[in-house]
Image (cartoon, rainbow, N blue to C red; front, side, top):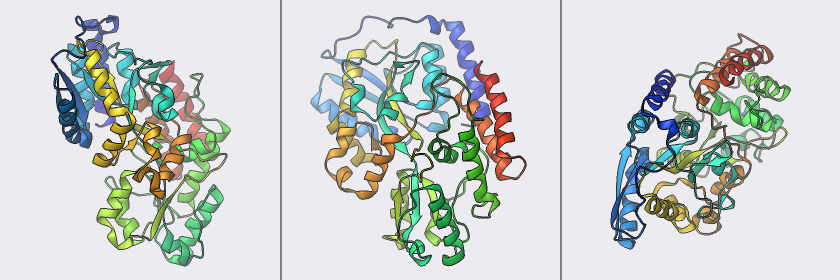
Amino acid sequence: MPRTARNAAIGIAVASALTFGLTACGSSGGDDVAADEKQTITVWAMGAEGDKLADVAKVYEEANPNITVKVTPIGWDVAHQKLVSAAAAGTLPDVAQMGGSYMGEFAELGVLEPVDTKTFDEKDFFPAGWQQGEVDGQAYGVPWYVDTRVLYYRTDLAEKAGITEAPTNWKEMKDLATAYQEKAGTKWGLSIQPSGLDTVQNFYSFLYSAGGEIINDKGEVVIDSPEAVKALEEYGSYFDKGLANKSVQPGYDVVKDFGNGRVPMFFGGPWHVTMLNESQPQIDGKWAVANVPADKASVSMAGGSSLVISKDSEHKAAAKDFIKYLTDTKGQADWYKRTNDLPANTSAWNSGELADDANLQVFKKQMDTAKASPTLPNWTEITDKVDQAIAKVTQGKASAEDALKTAQSEIEGLVK
């Protein structure tokens, strides 16, 4: 959903919450049905997960014949608005998939049931996965799957450029980007987003690795810190030196250019492994993934989704049991086989393909240090200001220091 539409929807949600009294909700809509009684639980899941979850639900029903799981697939393009409308009307499903960017908003509305920490142990999950479901220290979502960004690079073109090892720090990454152009004849050295919606997602790998943040653990805006300025200067230097394209069009397909050699490096998620294997078979064995090159440390962004229970659900016990099934070791390993979504439960990584695949282990190592975004209701408005600052720098319209000083002032106005 476009941010302008989403922000308008947030306003509708807050207004509706006041009208319906949602923020005052403190109990379920009725007596909770015991988990072993015959009942139907409703589940909303988004995107590809919504399509796949019905198959898992059938397996669960066979083992739990008293439970019927009604799964409704929801497109990500309409997911936020549907959740907003259901929250306002008091008709949220018993269980819903929820991304971290939604969590603060719906927790603030008072429509989510706190996680039962006797059933779900924080220590079983990646720290960043668990943090995406927390708001003000209270967990509302159980991590379902995670993702993060790592560096994809062409090993064959690196060898042609005289480099045989993956870059581990900023200098080595820039040296490799330069060598790709000068010695391997690539058009660009690195693909990073210059401007537009969610440019910040490419920038996070630089920002976090430099020790910077947008908002710190104390709730203070720190996007104009020396660490953040250093990160944006480094990010912008790829465009200044002609190593990255400053005029990338919306919908740009980096996978295609990675396959034809125009772009030899990019930051990508776990889904890119499947995309490359399926659509670029000619470069099989000619690329690899590596952890985000470090400044102070190698730190990437954390993404993924959690599972939440509606505070008004009358089937909390059964809903909790179904979520437990989806997020324990066996359920997580099965979900990976079905979807290639990375397990949020760390024990699922200890055997099978997840343990044996070198590329997947790079993602696991990155998740160990990945950083989750704050769960604030207006987080997309906040990151939009950072997107604008990045664009000023990549387009040569402002220095990193000046652009981030402006962003600092604008974001402070949003969090007060």
